[in-house]
Length: 369
Image 1 (cartoon, one colour):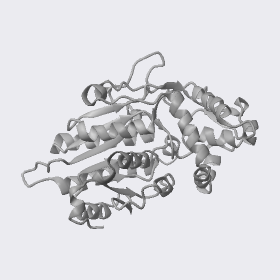
Image 2 (tube, rainbow, N blue to C red; image 1 turned 45 degrees about the horizontal axis):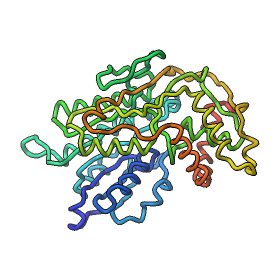
Image 3 (spheres, helix red, strand yellow; image 1 turned 120 degrees about the vertical axis):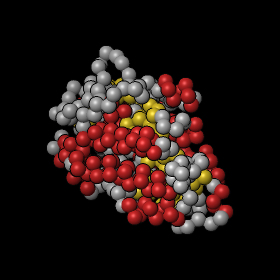
Image 4 (cartoon, one colour; image 1 turned 180 degrees about the vertical axis):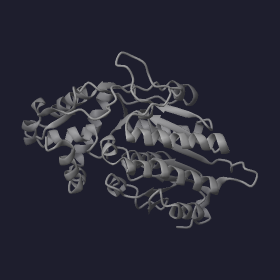
């Protein structure tokens, strides 16, 4: 996969976890925006949530390369840096589902902490000059989550970049750990990096263990809609294309060493999300579509609350707006319609990812409810 001289004039991005939900949307966004001006190397281990079908639209581009590798495999990552003049690492790769982290925390520590350390060390080795400074134009963008901040009171307040970390789940603890590793490299080595902490993403290609695609898929099949606890946990929802735009702008304009919170200004209770999905499905499904008869609020089923379930997340994206000029563009009422329309048009994709191991996991997690 060694590059030709002609390709060396392009800006080269190494995207980890690019076959996942946010990573694949980011890759597609970047090619739509920059087309031939960039080259993207996508590194993904293709675990259960990684799906190359997400990238069918770009897989034949000569400025796109896929490498199947685990970010914990130091030799594999070193080889990618040796073979390619990487300008920017966009680090998405992570285990990300809270429920899974409660069941198997070691996996999250391995991928999210050790994997991030491997990526940092390989990038540092490739970019650091003899005097300890770093080559011009290099950047490591670490994509993280608002869950590292813990939980907010229901009646107000927001997460800011200065909010102390207080993770409550093994997932958020592993992400907080990886954030702190990046911060340590920025402080110790003056490593050229930024961290972004985003709110809940939604949109095309999201694996249906997450709330929105799970509810869409279950409702269309007349299955129960499992809602944790009283359903009043609040999340701030961000359309995935808005997130991709934010990451691109932080890469280009973010001040080295800074953290930027990326929020959607779309706070909603989980039960609100489920209700909106049901109502929107009924609006969008044609009268003659037999699935209309299966979509009903009667499908809502309250299940035992998640252990350590944070009550409310809400991000204040003031800093990224002031310094970089980014703000969310997609209102939830529009984004959810676009998302449902995408799932309507890609029923085969949903069918493929909801077979086999995912079904076993779903049954175990919700006890068939």
